[in-house]
Length: 113
Length: 110
Image (cartoon, rainbow over all chains, first blue to last red):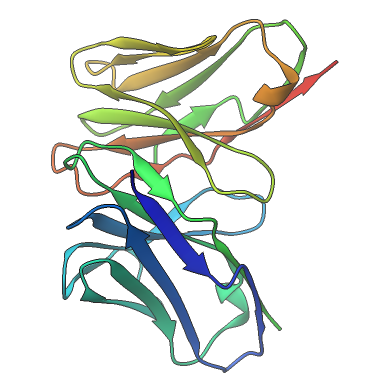
């Protein structure tokens, strides 16, 4: 079965600093991968998704970017963090075809100070 | 387009039933349901595909009416462990992305 690994679990960063969050997938190949963000007490906002190496679709224009350098690796980045970037970042993967369930990693709680 | 969930919050006593609704303004191919405990990642409950099917998972079941673009999650004889936030996620015919509603907070008390 598929396992999504994310780290770190928590992160505190100053405004204007860079960000790199990594997500790796175990137990499957060629998954569709997703980055979601959840503000405190809010819903899940889709940020990026990828159906293959080097392929990124952006859902929300902002100062974040994503990359997929390998089949099982998905990276979320920012050059300069804003206060509004604070939130709970979740990586998710989907296998079993495009109609399968999303499996989430444990998430990274980011606080920008 | 984000699906709309109702109600926003529900408080139940153990053993009571609840219904959570999810509706979309777009044609849907499938609906997902997830439960999230505080501070944790969402956990998959079930998927319903186009065809009006109804599924069950222990005492939790769901229906999907694609003509009305609506889905409902039914929780019967609620247990304390059912507490959490329930999200519906919808997919259109493209299927690559799942868009989530704002969530329904469910609290079950003894």
